[in-house]
Image (tube, rainbow, N blue to C red; front, side, top):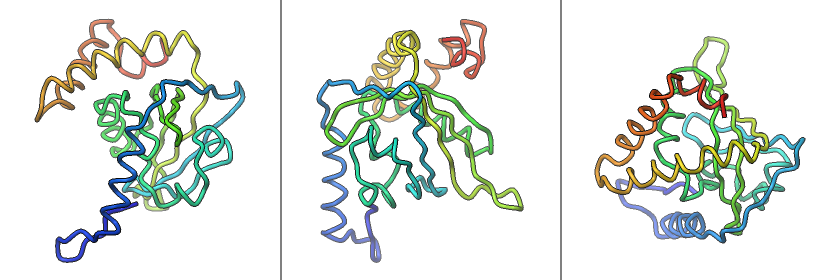
Length: 192
């Protein structure tokens, strides 16, 4: 679902596919799906975030078929209530070759949502160069969801109130709230 370009011009077919995918991502039902307690969702992407592998649990909870997600941006499951600031932090961390953990709300194909506790790591080749990313996700506890949701809601308000620098301001707000607890981001994530 990448936009194909030729000398800067977007092809009609790819633009249509991009707009359709964007509209699908914005459709939400308000209905929560729940992962089975032992379920492990697995996905892999290339360095640009395009999906190269998903397991059957990923397909089951997301409602997508494999051919719909392979080659698509991982953001195909991004829920509009998920702060962009958290993804900025995630990408900054994994791009440095470090692992990151995060609570993430995702959107299924039908518009339902589901929460995951994600562990994302870079995949490296023999020389240590990052060649992709690997994510394992499990069901978070209801306590963790109840703790993170109000913080994410507040971050979203900050993001939306700043047109140009919303993501940066949202991330500053998120990290300052966590710092007030005397914890690092990782410590905070594991404390809830």
